[in-house]
Image (cartoon, rainbow, N blue to C red):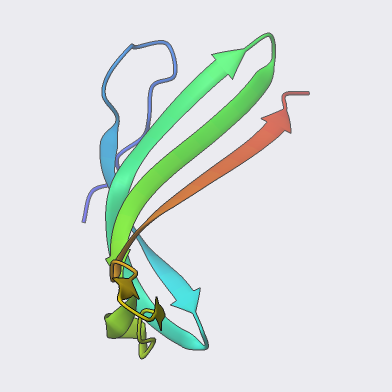
Length: 83
């Protein structure tokens, strides 16, 4: 499989990424959109994906007649200073 690098100098909608997510003690492969940015020597990587919590063995909570959606959006941000 060829590596795909993000070019932070291009303005795009991001690239598809694959990773492992552990939620409630269960690890699953997830796909999402990754974006890179470079601002004043601060490098950033952000991503988002939507998961079905029932795939991780979690039942969505409910209170009386109000139910919570089983689909949850997960977002992350990672930043580092360039040397």
